[in-house]
Structure formats: structure tokens, C-alpha cells
Image 1 (cartoon, rainbow, N blue to C red):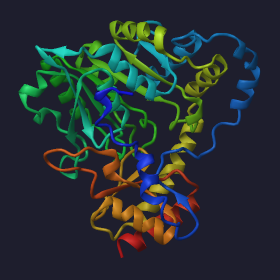
Image 2 (image 1 turned 60 degrees about the horizontal axis):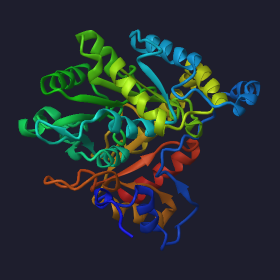
Image 3 (image 1 turned 90 degrees about the horizontal axis):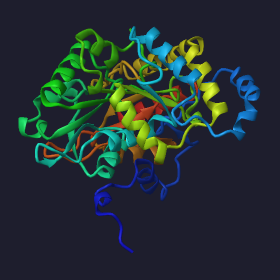
Image 4 (image 1 turned 45 degrees about the vertical axis):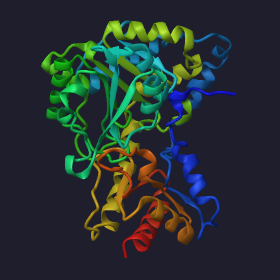
Length: 393
């Protein structure tokens, strides 16, 4: 049987590739998985009470775009966090995890053609792999813009040729970035929004790691857009509870944008969306209203990054991330380093090339590994010391 050609260039998913790389070799010691960003910190215990209170609502079809109470809680959080007032009915939509939104929103909002040619979607390289799948599903062309140490791990979209920008319909950008933990500054957002206005582009801002940071809260695209009075239809911002509240299995996030964009996304979602069950929407509503557990979560990650800074203090190539919960460690070869670590210690990390694509300027992830700091602190200390001893000594 035949399969769609548009997906033929998709490589195996990163973790399938990792299994193929490592499964033929025994772990050198007790296994410690530092390859995947699966949050392990405790979530608030009161979640159980909320779920129990609303358990009977499982027999109802849930509101497709989010309950009024959840949408109001999200809108209030945006006001508190970014100082931006939005309409909870027309400018925000609940998501069954932001992966769904990052994927489906492109189909709802990206035209197939622009200026007489197939539309282009620009994305950072390396990147969250759903961006590429979304572009291919929408019959548009993904173009990868390298994020390297030289540009502080945030791609310089303004350096892209005018010919490409004139065909570009959407730009994906992630801040804090996955995997490098780089944070977009106010000037970065301003320049990007001005570029979007000049070339009629939508910005898809993946801000799922916005609440995991070490210094000041990362500036968000919504507050900068308000400050410079940018067209709200240019901005599509995505947030999630997975990392913020350690409830990746809850599958709850949201997208906020201008009313026209949200209307188009709701129309597609009415046919193809999978709404969050109502009892889980009640849990999400309460999580967005509470910041105490987020502060506790952030403090735990800060302690882990402090440990990483100490362990790698003598490693010249080490760069301490400002946000997120990954380390992006420079090595001679990512695949070789991951295999070496596994065979000698049982520590599992992800080769950076599995998050990147080859370009004319090379693969920006080839000489890196991604290390997730999600396990308990004592396991993190053990893993980091093993990484240093095996790869850097």
C-alpha cells in the first residue's frame, strides 16, 4: 500500500532513534534516564480533592474549547503574569496538551500558498519535532534556521533572505527554548514582531517553559505585543501545565491569539479536536489559579542547575541555561557520547542531532547532547558527575 509522500522525509522520532542506538548494548551500571523531559516533581496534593469533587462530570461531553471557568482562570493568569487583558471567550482556547495546539493551529491558520508560491514555515533548528510534522501535514515547506552558540541559541530570522521571508506564512519560536534554555529578550520579540508586520507573517510562540527560570521571569510575546501595539492576529502564543505544574499526563494547555485566529482554530477543533474531559478541566482551572506550587517547583530546578554549574565549572564549553530544565552540553559527537555514557554508566541522554535537521551549514545539534534535570536531586548529582568523568575528563 502507498503512503503520503509528504511524510517520507520525517526521520524516526527522537526516542525511537535512541532505542535503536542503545538497545543492542547493555547498560554499564544502574540505569538513569536523563534523556526525556518527563517532570518528576510532586504536583499539589489538593488535585485529588478537585478531581473527586467533579468525578461525576466524566459522563458529560466536555466543552470543546474549554469551560467558561477554565477560560476565565487562564485569562486571569495572563493578566497577572503579563499585564495583558484578554477576552476569555474570543481570544483564548483550551487545548488537550500544547502539542495538539502547535500541530493543529498551523492547519487552521497557515495558507498553502503565499505570493504565488508554496508557503514556508520557519522554525528554529534544533526544535520541538511537532513543528516539522505540522508543516508537512499542512502541505507547506519547513525551513530550518540554525540556533547556535554564535547567536545565543536563538535563531536570527531577520538574517533570512527577503525571497524566503516573502513566502513565509508562519514562524515558530520557543522561549525558553528547548533544548538550550535560551530566553528571548524584549528586543528580540520587538524585532521579530516588526519582521512579522513587514512581511505579513504569524508568530507561533511556544512558551511552554515560561515558568521554569532562574533569574527574572522571561518576558513574553503578549506583553511586548501590547507594549508596541502589535496586531493581535499576528501572535499565536501557547502555554502548558505539563512543566509548570508537573502534570504532563493531564494534557492541558491553552492558545491565545486574536479573535479571528481563535475563531478559525475553533472551527477546525469542532471537527477534529479532542477536548479535555470536564473533571480534568476543573483541575486545570485550579492549577492556573495557584502559584505556590509553581514557586516550589522552580526552586527545585534552581537547586539542580546550581549543582550542574558546580559540576561543570571547569568545563570550558559549558553554558548555564537561563530557563527550561535541560542542559545542552557540547561534545565531540552526540551519538558517540550517548552510546559511550550508556555502555559505561547506564546514564541515558539524547543526541542533539535527533532534535535537529541537516542544513547547508551543517547540523547544529551534532556536537551536543540534551540532558534532562527531572529526576530527584541525588540522582541528578550522580548522573552529572558520571557525565563529567566519562565525557570531559
